[in-house]
Image (cartoon, rainbow, N blue to C red; front, side, top):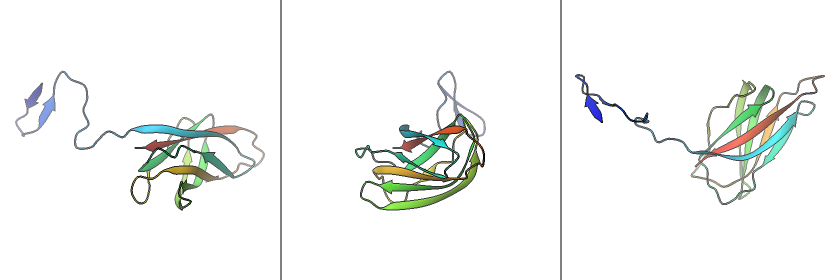
Amino acid sequence: MFKRLACGVAVVVGASLLSVGTAQARWEQLGCRKVGFLVDRDIVPVGRLEGRYEAVRLSVANNAIFLNDVKVVYANGQMDDYPVRTQVPAGGLTRAIDLKGERRAIKQIELTYRSRPSFKGRATVCVMGNT
């Protein structure tokens, strides 16, 4: 049920929360990789060429990680490099990274992150795509 306020704004009463003015993003997991801190590069293979995505974001579990760059390699061999340069805490997400061009099929994601000397822990990085 809608109620109109004196200022002319309609609000929803007694219904689920709706997103006003924007479509809800549909994120699906494309792949995960356990990364160690002794090397500073890893590849997350996606390999699902039937999906087309307009943005990606990464989730990090088990340990914080400082991401420098995310390189997206598309199914046609082209690639784009996106500087991230941010610390992502364990349980955190990166910002959504809008892909260049129209919706694109992704082959793999290449991560460059800051290694941590004498640290033997691991983090799990998962890539999600927005359809």
